[in-house]
Image 1 (cartoon, rainbow, N blue to C red):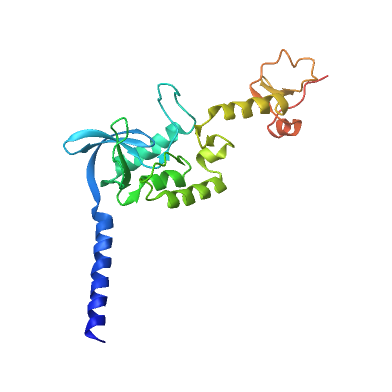
Image 2: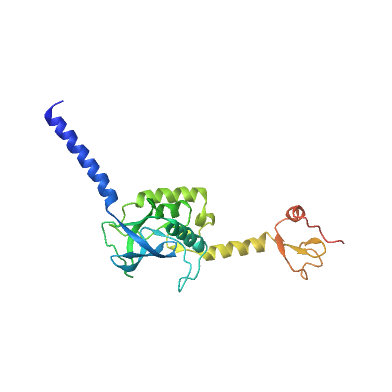
Length: 231
């Protein structure tokens, strides 16, 4: 092997090692102050407590002043809380663009014991890919791939059609689905007294019956142990 080729291979090896080292060394280790939401935590950074907003993802709210609590918001918060509270090492990785948003929150990819929380939230269907503002887009492609799998599997926020959309979360879609189901399909009232009795809309006692459970079909009611009223 020529001296030139040997020198070139050594250079490539050193460059590769340096690149790998840089990819992990640009993370900043911080200490947790408290979890706030599915996509936000508070940490001690540069000697002061600061909020950290997870880059490129958005989870449903738990206590928004205007939106209130949204479906799957508490699940997302609980999931993130468990990760950061049980984790031994929390690190922040900043992208090449601004590292703060207009509210003064740090913008970062957040790791717990080497696992990126954004990826874990997306896998569970507890966040959507959102707030994509170049040049802070380092992991957007792999986030999109994870989200597509969660959508295909129908997990978390993807269980409900049209709940998670490009402009945010829409709890009203869940309400409309529930109302439509009640008005069109699940009209059979189940009442639990001395006996389990179900009443269809044709029953003379239907209007007076207090529904303790609703069924969509008579077969459902029978399988649940209910019987029709005696004529």
